[in-house]
Length: 140
Image (cartoon, rainbow, N blue to C red; front, side, top):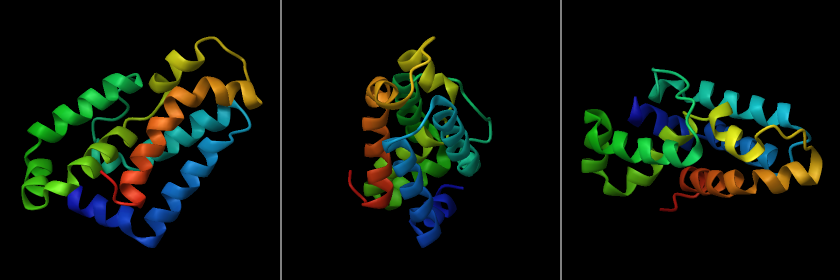
C-alpha cells in the first residue's frame, strides 16, 4: 500500500488534504476540532495502518514508525528503490497513527481553548508540520 498511498498523497487532492490538515492545526478553535482532525487523518491514511489506532503518544509513534519502516517488507522495497522516500514513508506511518494518544500528554485534563490550547499543542503541532512538509514539499 505504500506506493499507492505515496502517489495519492502526492496528487493534487492529497496535497489539498494535507494542507487543510495543516491549516486546521495552525489555529484550531477547540479541542474537539483537534481530535476530529487527528481522527480524520488517521482514517484517510488507514491503508498503511490496517491494525488501527495505536493510541500512542507522539514520541512512541515516531519510534514505531522508524521501526516499522525498517522491518516492513513493502516499505523496505520502496526505500530500496528510492532511499529518499524513507522520511515520507515514516511521515505517513506517523500520521496514520494520530489520535487521542498524541493529545493526552499535551492537554491532559485541560479544558483550554484558543491561544492557550494552541500553546499547549505546540510540542505536537511543530513535529506534525514537519511530517506534512515531508509529504507536501518532499523535504527530508
